[in-house]
Length: 239
Image 1 (cartoon, rainbow, N blue to C red):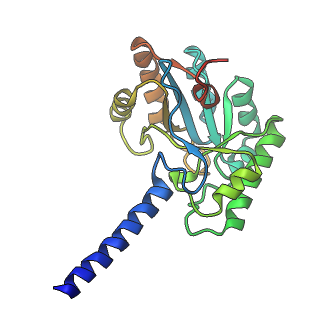
Image 2: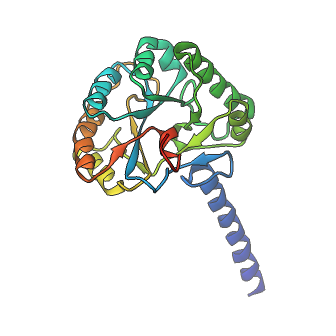
């Protein structure tokens, strides 16, 4: 009996530690490994649309949809994609959207060294600033997975981590399911995560994303929501 109790107690400790680690790495509300937010102010009927993995060859089409509805957004871009498509990156910034850091090559950061993480953030930060003239203020980890060393890297580049309230899973779900997820997650201060690229692949197929955004924006507007960038939605009062 004593041996069994000790074993179960030890197993519980291991499971507890594993749960804490999972939360630290992937939990949307976790700030254990680096400063991070996952929602904005609840004082306004506002939603922040965010797009990861760009820019891509289809980003200009997305910009047209956003422009039609006067919907500002935040784009978390990969340095490698910015170097491949610098003009598209400048188009995003020129249209008044916000650009965040999404690492240079879109790696999974877990089990990587602090030096590796530092290089990924630094390369993307410098590429985006050199291309647009402005340094990103926000960072999103690829796959939403943080790791040890990220706190120091974010501090070096003065970056706030951004997770999400709702993720569209637009890389594998059909349009109607993506739209349904967004509508279900719609609430004051929500941060939506979608994708205008697929990692650092050239010419990714983002037709699902484009159609989902085309359908979701007017539906959300009909429910009284408007759209803000991450920097604005984090402010209790609009500037």
